Image 1 (tube, rainbow, N blue to C red):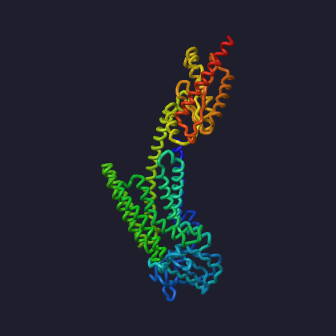
Image 2: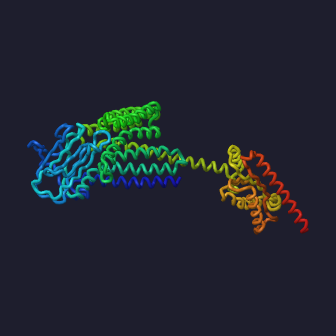
Image 3: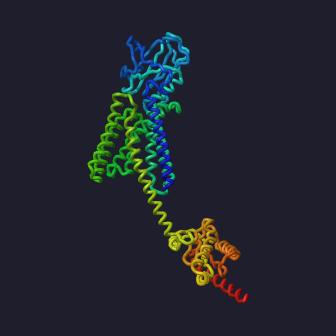
Length: 557
């Protein structure tokens, strides 16, 4: 119990550190007057642009038209010479070309390299404008295959490469947080599953870890910061679409395992639809009928249906179980919160375009899954404690108190199992000599001491991976999976020699009579017959040793 609690404490410390980092990053990203992330020289290049072919002034950000088939261009004349300067701006699903006078100095998106669909991907365009003279005409052309982003320009920045990269990092800080935190939590949950899968049903932690990982992947592809690690924007865009499409199905599974979805029929239907629709989208994309982006509204509708069905079922089940107005209000508050975040994301996607895809829903999902996860962790700790208590009682029931060996109950259980299996073993029975004489003359306390000495000697077998039992009184048994009967009898002879050389204060020597037999199922041996023969052999040895002992005593007399 202390072990698992220690792991959870480590997790909470790591989570606290991560959240502290989150606050710091968010502060740095929103502070306008001070802070590390604002101590860089970056110039906004939103003014001074003109629409190509006209004298119309353009101020960024702006959406100039809805043309999907041709490039839209803006231009400006440099007011001063440039040195090691860069400009940067973000584009969504757009092909980009940048010219200095008539010379092409930058391009993004090559239609010939797009395997399926229309989009080249969404990235931060970082464009070097080194050593250009004042008066040079700088032209930026964009073309997007989707009406939503056609003719659209976002804010443009100018500065050194280091300042540009720091600006991008600052702009992406909230989404970077929503990548780091789920990744840490996912790693922790997977470790919990691996460490404690034998103690309790830990698949819920593995599935929750997978859900967090998918959220992290989705957030990572949305940051556009991935381009500092990977060069293929098209592949990352496909990963973004797929992770977004599948995240609702993984959340559904986790919520079902946590007991928040009680209607099995609704769950099965939703899960089928949540997996089938993204699969159908992939097929349609491969057939080039349409592509993911043009079908995103289907995923949005699917998300709305999931939220409605899941939350409604949850509220109904919650109320029926708790019968509490307070708990019902809590459930309704969660419903309103989830649905509000979903509506905010739809507004941002279709109207505002300021926060990033799924920004509010990701925050809400992190909160809900974290709350449910904490509940699951507490439940798991309780289950782990119960299992420890159960295993303790079970061990006590199958352990001999005096010697620490397995007892008669364990022997009966193990031999019953052994009789059903086909594995060969060697079976040894041992019986202590002279116990009655010690008990009668020196008392049962000394007899118990002698039994413990014999047990300690026989435990040498258990050190080799075998099973030792005290059957009761002075009777013992050893079942070996890696020794033959002959080897076991040789070991018993050595034990008797050690016992004879021991210094002790008993009125007579202590020793064991023993008999061993090999059980080989491949020879059609019957287990209980072999056990009977081994026991008979032990008693024959006991009689032989008694005769030898009597003969020695009569000779001495």
